[in-house]
Length: 297
Image (tube, rainbow, N blue to C red):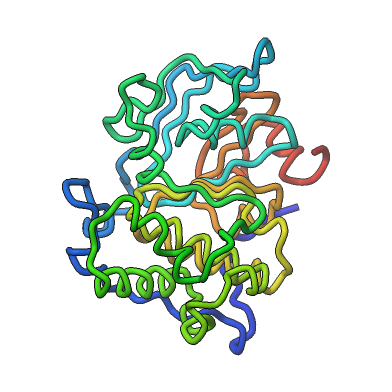
C-alpha cells in the first residue's frame, strides 16, 4: 500500500474561506514576547528547531510511558505522531506544554526545550508556557459562553487590549480558523450551539488568539464527520505557514496528507522519524512499513 501526499479540497460550497496572509496589528501581539507571526518565512530546506527532546523519559508512577526519546521538531512545519494506541504519542504531546503536571503520578527525566526555554525547569512559568504552546483536544471543548467570549478569553487574561483591539483580534482569529463567515452574525450566541466542526474551529481560534508559537493537536478530527475533517485539514495546511504544529493521529491517510514530518511510535519509543514521504513510501524500519501498510495496529 502506498500513500500519496496530496491535498484534497472539499466541495467548493463547503470549503472554508481562504485564510488572509496579513498579520494582525502590532497592538494585538503580546508585549515583550517573541512574536512568531511577524517573522519571515524560513526556507523549507533548513527550518530551525522549535522543540527538542534529549534522552527524554516519562512515567506514570512505576509505569514508563516514554523511553529515551531523542527528537527534534522543526519550526513552522506539521509534525505527525503516529502509532498504535498506548504507544506514548499523547503523553509526549502533553509534556510539551506541561499538561501532565495535573496528573499526580506523572514525572519525567531528560531534557525538553522550546527554542531556548527549558520546559521542565522548576523556574519555568507554566502559564506563560501554555500561552506559547496551545493545545486542541480530541473533542471540541468550547466554554459555555458566547463565541466572542470563547475567542477573547485568553486574550483578556494575557493581553492588555482596548475593546476595539479585542474586537479586531477576535475577528482575525476567527478568520485564521476559517470560521468567520459562518459565525460573524452570531458572535454573541452560545458557542455550544454550533456544529462539531464549527466548535473545533472556534477552539482553534481561541488557541491562536493569544499568539502562541506552537499548536498541539491531539486527534483534532476524531469526533468529526468527513466534511468537517476536510475543513480542519485545510486549516492545518494553511496554519503551518505561521505556526509549528504537532498532531497526534490514528488516521494514516490524514497523517500523509497534512504532515511534513512523521514520527512512528511503538511501546514508548520512536521507531522512525523522517519526512512524511519517506516514512510512508520507503521506511527504513520493517516495523514502520508493517504499521503504515496496515499489517498491525
